[in-house]
Image (tube, rainbow, N blue to C red; front, side, top):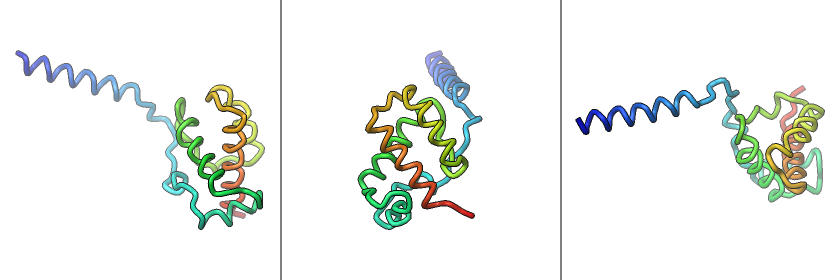
Length: 119
């Protein structure tokens, strides 16, 4: 009896977890999840020659920790600069970003776009 109750409890919990998963979220690529390193810094400097590795890493961290609390992260190169600026302006209050966090996030996103632009 106790084993059956335990099994049903665990099964019920797993079912609730699976039901609450949002499978419609867009997957990110492994490249998007890479933390910027000194190697990538030169590419990122295309948009801002004064950008530092610490700023890039801070923006990256914000994107992958705060921007996915309500939805999964999008592939950065799927949107252009205008769309990203709009989304960051729109979503920053919802994500409760400070002005400094918003600035670092914007710098990271736009730098990533510039460094990974394909034409």
